[in-house]
Image 1: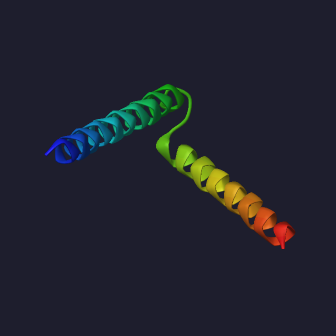
Image 2: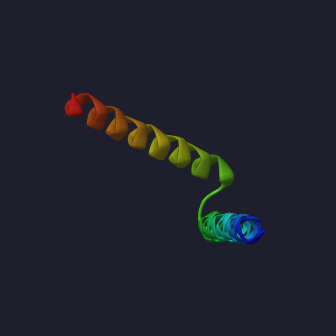
Length: 68
């Protein structure tokens, strides 16, 4: 019974941590979007987001290729 309580407590704490992390990331991106939206419209932010994701993908692929 003690093992079950430990597992349940761990699972609850893990779920709370995941929810807190999700809220933090959501709030962070919301604040960044609100700040940048004062200077640029949404269309430009989308273009910059796509360019950033493409740049990160290129860096990832280069790292994988160079590792071999």
